[in-house]
Length: 196
Image (tube, rainbow, N blue to C red):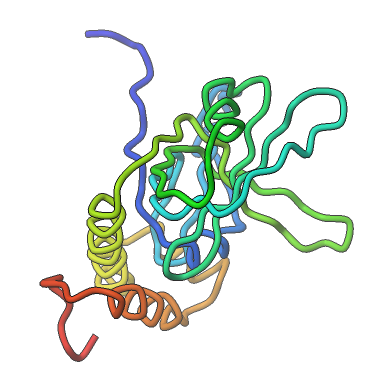
């Protein structure tokens, strides 16, 4: 059996929830332990999978290329930053035509601004151009994953939900509204109860 670290499953989250995931933590003191963002619906995320419309790219680097991209889903905007340590992603942002649908797998990052607020962004591992059907499928599947987290939020023994309640509070209704609004764009067969 190999002791090589395994890759974490990339979690699906809408921008409305991802941008609120300001609390990060490690589960061990090992310097190589993964850094997790705590999603407000009670899931830890070391990697995130998002699909949306790349609406804008800009090289904001001063001494070297450092690209920022805006990826929009039905609930808000993800900010994606890639530089010399993410050469493939930086190249994808440099060469991208906007607007276009993209799939991004990346690691959540938080940054505290001078005024004390916390910005959440993605450091991409990959950025891939996709079609509208892929984006639509992502919206439906992300709504389903979000609904699963919401349904499990009050389960006894759900340690990440307990942490989320402690960090963000009890009210997760905004994420239920966001997933319903995201689905309103589609004539979809998503398995979302009418009373959700």
